[in-house]
Length: 264
Image 1 (cartoon, helix red, strand yellow):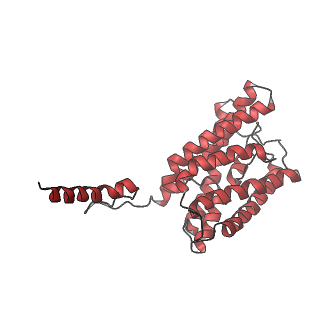
Image 2: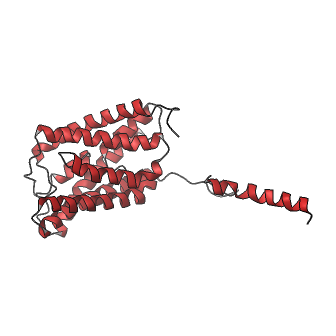
Image 3: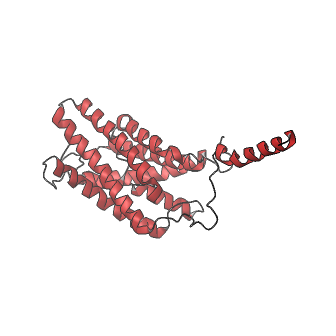
């Protein structure tokens, strides 16, 4: 091989490996079956399973914490730590199937964005996701109670109707929506497992309500009279403020992440 031929051969090799080195996705081989979106049933199952597991983590770790210590600060630390790790794993596992919403506020916000020309779930998908999330949340609370020998269903007596707690839910949910849709606008959704779990862990501590930020989880937590519970009489107020927070979060996304002008 001459020097010229060697140079041309090296250039050909560099061209061949350039897409892989730069992170560009490889195209399917000719004749290969292109990847297909999961069926709606699989997405619904992922949302139900993921929400159930999330609530089981929240409620179960709360029960475990109260059995191990009487220090409320340590109880909250244990509860928030378990939630951070559990949520991160669930998003990583089920995100490729359904998007790992586990949250009607996120689903409705995504549907609204898609309705206005963005990417997201359809109305049909949203109509399936939300009931699946609610059923999953209730099942997760019952499962956690069963694991710790608590009554399977016992309405919580933990009143959370104070005005400052409702304000905390607005802040927590607005921040969550801003984070998720901000990541989407800046093409950084690959960081969602770490970013969303970290935000929820932080919001446990900086919001007065300990950051439910999720209507389905709020409903599920009414079914358990344990550390993580919420009295049924407080549920509607929390859900209302969560929806208000979702609207504020979307408004902030539109204001901050202007299409075509986001920072590199």
